[in-house]
Image (cartoon, rainbow, N blue to C red):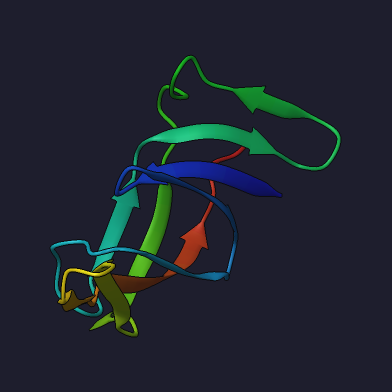
Length: 104
C-alpha cells in the first residue's frame, strides 16, 4: 500500500516504514507530524484519487533529523568580458519516517 502526499511544494510516493527526505519542516527532531495533503491512496489494485486532496486522510510520520544537502556550485560566465561569478547553495532538508497510512 502506498500514498502520494504533498509537502514543501513537491509530491512524494510513500509507503509505511519508508524514510523520505523532504523540504525542511519546522518541528523538533523526534516529533510526530501529520501530512494532511494526501493526493492518492493505492493498495496495488484499488485506488482513490482526491480532487485535489482526499478528505479525512492523513499520513503520520516521525521526524528523524534535519540537515543540509551537498553544495550545488553555480558559475556565471561571460565570454571575452573578464567576468566570472562563483556561487553555491545548500538546501535545508528533513528526513521523516512514515508510521501509518490511511485506510483505503
